[in-house]
Image (tube, rainbow, N blue to C red; front, side, top):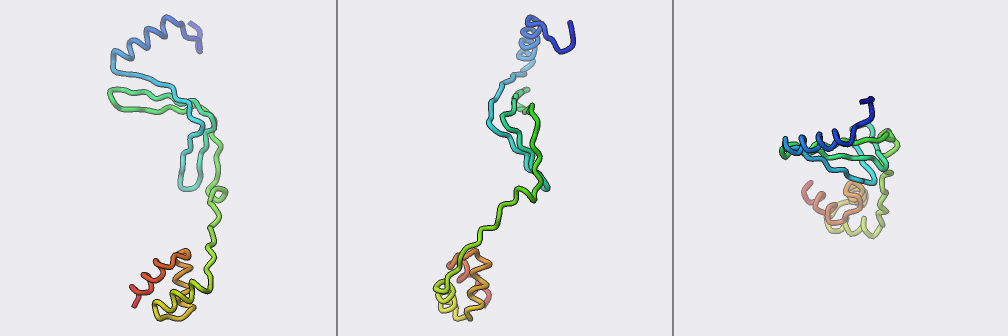
Amino acid sequence: MFPGKVNPRMLKKMQKMMKDFGMETEDLSPKKVIFVFDDEEWVFEEPKVQVMDILGVKTYSITGKPMKIKKEEIEEEEVKVEITDEDVELVAKECNVSKEEARKALEECNGDIAEAILKLEEGK
């Protein structure tokens, strides 16, 4: 037998032996697999994934070349919430604080009025 080539009869025999020992395999066809690390992500586009179940323990094997993306490239832009003067006045009036304190609380709470009021009330 040559390296890299498998005799079809031997393959069937191997699969039967694996099944007899409680091993089953299944091929999956995901569109994308992503590994997320602290400093980067690995993205596998159209990978070949095989699941091997050995006595209830599943092992996933991924074949493909990942596209490695550094964290700086994937960090989403912070969504800037527009805080209106009406919101600031409402929070300032409700909590009896200055407009500057109200604006600061709203900015810390991403514009959430109820959360800003609760935060200012707790701080008293």
